[in-house]
Length: 332
Ligand SMILES: Cc1ncc(COP(=O)(O)O)c(C=O)c1O
Image (tube, helix red, strand yellow):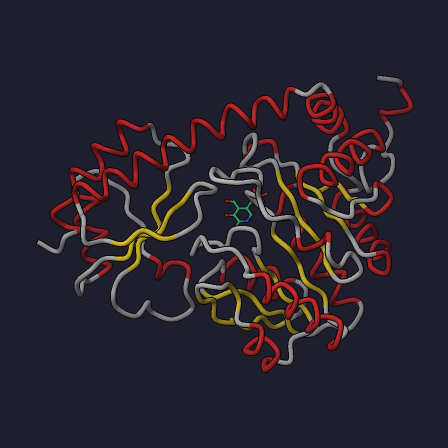
């Protein structure tokens, strides 16, 4: 590494990494990625804050977010940017674009490839309607592309940013593909917003750590990142299959939804259940269950939905865990 690389450098990040990332995102996410408009940041968490503060600077006052979704994350980032945040319902086709239009918001945070936490993908007609909404309202879509490398049944649907690079800020992260502790993410910015985002990044921390960026660039360029993803897809896919099989065996009335993707599936319990009591009873048996209510702005209506993570649990532990709470899931 030359000594010139030890200075503050470009707040967008190291040119080597932006170049490699743009190529990777064009190839893997069908993104319209340009290294000049790529900003390396400290994960989605920082990227969201930078995006909202940049948008606030252009006069955006309200940001919408998916419900169920990540209400606390988006609301707190919005309030730190001086914006208000409004929830918009998500159904089996993704965010309800008509309901979004009724809010008057001029920005929205969405997870189009794999909705967190319902696990659906944004339906093709909704993708187009969302982009039309953004064009008609002079609005911006913040795309959280957090786990799109992990689709187990087919090639993942491309990034929304690839369809409307002028209207979408796309945020990516290595938190799922490598590890959250690395704190590396990226933003693909529309030309009109790049300067404002870069200024926010400069004000925030003057740029992300250079050594980490160069290491990631080398990992991707060498082909080892792709190899790692291929291997991990096999591992996670087997864990998901173990979860689906265990539910079929121990709670056959429960329906499972969500794409064969990412690190979570949704179980729909059959009968009326008290979500809090169920989660507490499972906890007493050392099994961590998570209710959909934690991702809602209002209590979850009956019947209960559970968001079941399988990312960092082995197949055997998944099978044993579901077996241990089978009677609770069956409501008996
Ligand atoms: C919906 C969603 N988006 C993004 C992230 C990644 O955030 P970060 O890159 O800040 O670790 C996560 C991590 O769990 C997530 O659940």
